[in-house]
Length: 309
Ligand SMILES: [Zn+2]
Image (cartoon, rainbow, N blue to C red):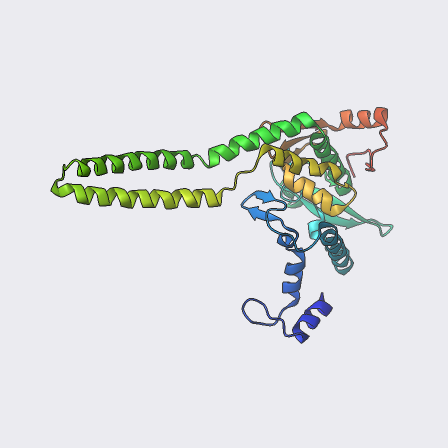
């Protein structure tokens, strides 16, 4: 990234403010998902929403490389390596679970999620810390199950469609008002044609014309702000998650960020709430380990069996 920065500065390429490019601007540039055509509006992401200038596989390669570099740079810090930070809560006291690293007597570094109440030695909570890899694998597996379930995907899409139509609920209202105004203007014009003309007619007509113009602007803005996404496109977009490689950190992170709302962790079970209506799953660790033992599905994930460190 430093080489890129120097090369661009040597070539007299400036940023939008006309200043020299910095290390941070290169980083920002390389991470900008718009370059591969991704359009984002609030929480809505539309892949291919704008013309791509960087192919997806190249973009992914760059992200992976940057991730590797970052790891090499700050291996022991590794703060955002904790994928469940901000999503994981203690089932007993409701506090966050935060990432924590510890070195064992043999010099091996272990990563845990620990209840903040326990960390701060508040006596009311006794939640045991859990191994980072173990809990993350469990959550990723649970989420992938939903992603691979066509009925669940269908439910998500119908919920999104519903949400989408509710979000732009002012549009039909504006359109209705516009039709009424247009009728009123037409009536007024008819009256003028028939020679019915009072002092207030002109003022009233001007008023109506002004309202009409305002409504047209509002409708245009509303349509511009809320691009309609079809159910087919949503399904297509969600199906892209089928192809995720859950061994890759960036993919795991994407999966968690997209689907997981919160996880309440107990010593014997966890309750996952997903980012869609009625999307709650309870996984008891005993059940989970039992299914693991019977299934032997040859999954991609290695999951340690013990919930406790
Ligand atoms: Zn707690």
